[in-house]
Length: 383
Ligand SMILES: *Cc1c(COP(=O)(O)O)cnc(C)c1O
Image (tube, helix red, strand yellow):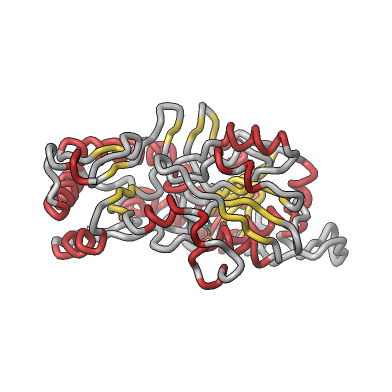
């Protein structure tokens, strides 16, 4: 069994991928070839914004977004500690102080109720992460941001394709940044990413920043990056885009089925707030793409080992909150995010991809129940 199976998907689109790559090899425009614009138009239409700017990775998308907003040394950006390193890393790399605000224990995303206390005169943006494929509470976050005239940058690296109150992730704030790393819900065959915005001025700046701050050939009004999306990756993504809507549906169905199977075996939802094994909670207003299907268990290492012994791979997203990472010490207060600290010790992700079979899911759910000693009655008392 594989944690993420990319081969089954490839078999379905093999001819199209090869034809699309072949077209690039024939025209030879490896940098900024016509596939870039074709992809950007298709993705902007899919997301429902005016502009998509293809970039070399999700990490570079975050970096370019903050550069485009002219946030830098001495400024502060409010974000979540319960995320992949890139979120806080790009903030700090620009000399910006990351201000880590604790998460909501039900959604695992930044807790909007705690944001306002973290805003200071130096705050220049709020950067929520839509973790595990489920959008952060963007309405509540935008409302606070508007009141303080701050832009919101959605780190949507795990949530491309997700919906929130009928709109798509990446269309929910001033700038949305995503990743097409191969293991993400929409993955290329190498590194790739994108920014989304309906702000024309910002889109123009992002296009310049990805190409060394150049506005016309050899004329550079700003400092920029070499952060262009590769033409070959754009070609791969165009081929994959035809499958994406049905993969989003499959992900939603499989995520819901995991929850059902685990709850039949005694697990509770994070929304219930009790139980030794907790399944994710996705409110009816949200459509998750389940970049990860992540549960909480009491003895995580034992569960991981027990599943591994049955040939079931697992992974931990993420074992250490960013404010406990050595690179972000010593300026930060460890005690400030107790929810993240607690949950980081308990989360474990199960195999998740659109081609997971019913039989595999059943085997995984049974293995989780066995390894946690879970039974329907016990669970309620255990936490
Ligand atoms: C994957 C990821 C990134 C970085 O994306 P890359 O394309 O790997 O650079 C940033 N933030 C989050 C939350 C991610 O999961």
